[in-house]
Image (tube, rainbow, N blue to C red; front, top):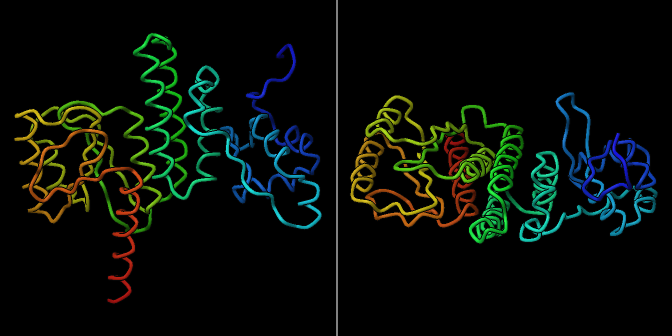
Length: 291
């Protein structure tokens, strides 16, 4: 049993959260199902909430008045990702990290928006503190694992469309950060894609083989560093030629400085990646409807 007073980042149960809000568990279930209050679930399916989220929610609106009117309150945002950096130790816990992500998604238009904010503000802020020696190696690694695990959980809840498009995610010539890969998968799955994560591809020719065998609609190449070495450029041209033969598009994403590759599309942000993917899924639907 925990000692001391409750902390804002404590994870609490449905009855505890409902009690803090002054409403019944059924009302809180309805609000959380509507995406108004972010929550996670245990392996057994039980809801869990962050005390800080519930307190913020209570401060923004009087839930009892909302319940009386039958109108659910607005979603509450658990701070901006730039502010998460100051709560790094708490967010090393995957449940707390996931609650923060769910809160951010509930107040964002798409997973593309979430991914850009998380990478540009939270991950970048953590990386800078780590380089400056203000964040230990152990905490840095724990936060990366927590973020990846949380995004993967959320991505796993996004169901691809039946007979929908297929995308291969890969990182040639050096590994992209695991958070980058996990967020890209969430963005594509939200658009309706089935995603095959190949991971780091060091052996030349392997992506060309996968393109020939799987015939994906897109190959999304990720990198978060320099991607312009002569050897890598040669490999990328080979991947581009193999994709063109199969009618597969190559998208270059992440924070890398990608070279110019014939037939490849540079995607500047995850927001753009999500829009592009959603547009192509919509086009596929129009084609099917016309048949």
